[in-house]
Image (tube, rainbow, N blue to C red; front, side):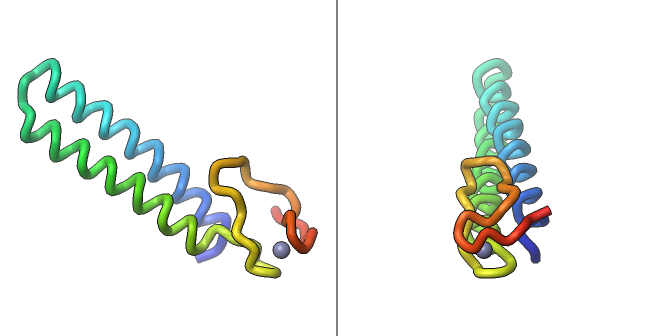
Length: 86
Ligand SMILES: [Zn+2]
């Protein structure tokens, strides 16, 4: 696992999580199928949490191991050691 893959999984996890929570919410409110809506929303939450947790572990500088800010954009240079990131 490298930081690029990790960042990709973070973004994918959060977005698919948001979409699933949204769909789950719609099902629950509009269609009255609370069980299914809840289940989908919970899976969405888990996807989001999974994306964030793996990013906390793997989203870091390949050179010095400094963790990047997962809320910002992917940096061009490591803020700690200044090594260039693609
Ligand atoms: Zn670094």
